Amino acid sequence: MSTTTGGRPEAGENAAAESVVKLRDHDILKEGWASKLSGKALFGQYHWDRRWFRLIQRGADVTLYYYKAIKDEDPRGQIRLTSNYVAREIEAGEKVKKPHAFAVGKLVDDGATRTYYLSCESEEDKLEWMATIGAAIEGVPDRALKRKSTVRVKMKNKIQTLPTSEIGATVTKQKYEDPKWRMQQWEGLCEMTDRPMDQWKKWESKEGVAVARMSFKEQPYAIIMVDGLVAAPCSIVYSFLQQACTEGGKLDYFFRDERVLQSIDPDRANTIVQWHYKTSLPGMTPREVCVLRSWVTEQDSYNGTSGMMILSAAHENFVLEKDATLCRVELSGVVLKPDSTSPSKTRMTFLAQVDVRGSLRGMLKQSYKSGLLVRGFRTSYQHLVEEADTYMKVISM
Image (cartoon, rainbow, N blue to C red; front, side, top):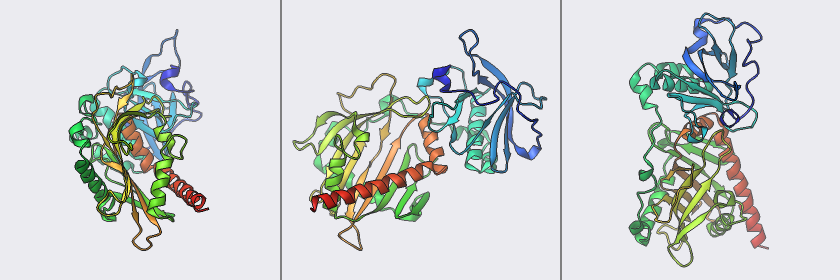
């Protein structure tokens, strides 16, 4: 099962725990029957074992134990759930055919830690397990216990996916080739980046960088913003970003597998591009997007802003690669505008509205709430600011 489990089993999986686990009722967040995909192959075949699972919390420690029988005191194995674990949906590339199945594993595949696959007796039970495990990892098990009380709420938490034909097909050629329409979208992007703090579900400002998000429940896609100041004029930051996004640039990681499907104008400021992303997440299929990418100068905009805008678009030459998952990008990009207190500085704001689809959505939510994603955004932004500062010094020599 090397392609399915992605690593070695947890210590003690096929043996009793080192010590007997004594339980109290208030330690048990959830318990019940489920089937677990075996960690070792028998005659080359992996099999499903029915086990009794107990999710236990003691202080800050959260552990999922599994037993051969309800009355057993010694667990057959355990999964210690730290902040870098997640309960998520099954990806297509994992080829787990059992109904009502989900995965429990690391947010990022380290090649050594096993990913566990569990199959529940109903879809509702699966969603309840995922919600309870997720809340326990976040450190708020009481919320999970309340949330799992009704079928209606449990089914609401189920990840919704759109048919492939609906993904990225809303912006047609008639629209994206119209300069007036493109500028209307840019104005809309600028308005979204100007939202006050109280209109965001979560806003965290530290070390000069603010990271904000909208609710993961209320939208079919993740909405995240990163905002801060660059000690350089807008024109220089704009030039830096354009160079950073080209091959060999500081941001070329996001565009290395770029395929240009159409150049709308001669200077290629507006293009339809296809991007292909491979993730380092366990069992995760590659993601692809087909987007309109527009570079907007200060002279183009009505309010002196500049930057880059991306938005999912439909194009006749777009072909989804085999085994890839098509994602939708709502109005997103980076907006540059002079700082209100110092025109020589630039307020640089990144806004992403993305339907990443499948289990990646749940993993994105978990990594944000655990703080991993916020720290990553803040560090990346600070690094970008340093690179922009270096760029300004070089061109000023």
